[in-house]
Length: 198
Ligand code: MN
Image 1: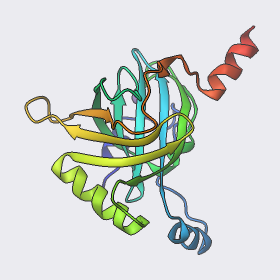
Image 2: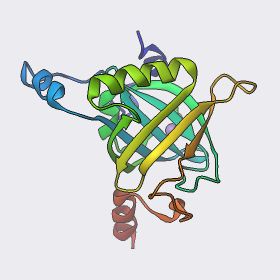
Image 3: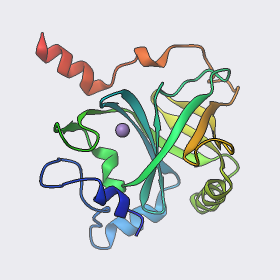
């Protein structure tokens, strides 16, 4: 069961995080999913004991997840450590809220960026899924993000000599590459919360 680690780490009586896999609305959801050309991705900004960003890529009904301490970058010269963490349920892509003190990952979670993605060489969703599965098992993924902030081609490369969970996220030098400091961009609801507090 791919979500056992996710469930084991959390007490759902105490955290507002989603419990389960995607709930399918009878018939319709399946049809809609088949029509969908791309897979979804989300990046959470997570104010845990250490601020980090969580990249989550939809694959096989779950969100494959990496915690990026310094956050993603559009600068091909800056390789960012991305630590693979447990698979999250697909529903987690819509989650924003406060994980209460004393719980795993306690702190505020905002959706910082989201959109669709595909494997670099894929021309349809099935090819994307096949390539992504292969990439995960060999430790080298190349994919195109179409988010509001993150755009263009990226690679996730597993570090062989380090901890087995350590990967690097690297921006490919394409037309979207830039040296902008993305950590200055705040999540939409983070901005709203700041306005409310004034
Ligand atoms: Mn996190």
